[in-house]
Length: 140
Image 1 (tube, rainbow, N blue to C red):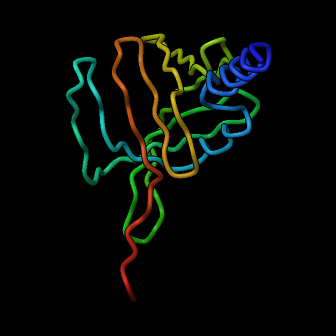
Image 2: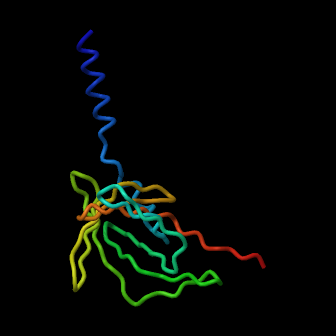
Image 3: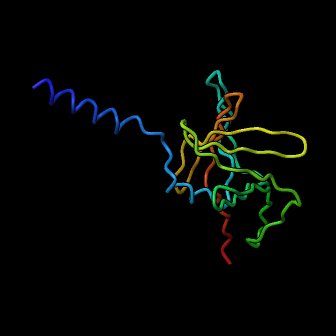
């Protein structure tokens, strides 16, 4: 009997200690995102309402970029000329964004993602929660 119990516990631990994000979910990153909330290491948070800027993320073959875009009423976007390139590394702790620009290098760990939200944590312990951008539709 104890062998069955031990086998069940091992199976349960293997199923419940997953890394969180799978490679199949990474395609959800592509698209337009707006920041929803920042959670600080002390547990406090700052919520964001509507913002004039939205992040556009494009990922292909573990490489991508993030670019600020500015939605217009007609549904199009004004875009900035700069983008932050990144590589997505598959580590033992999950997926990590590796950013490198002329002025700085930094990392963000991907904590959660689905089709409508994702969360990353930077090296200082700040958690950034994003929601899928939904343009405001004005009836004609």
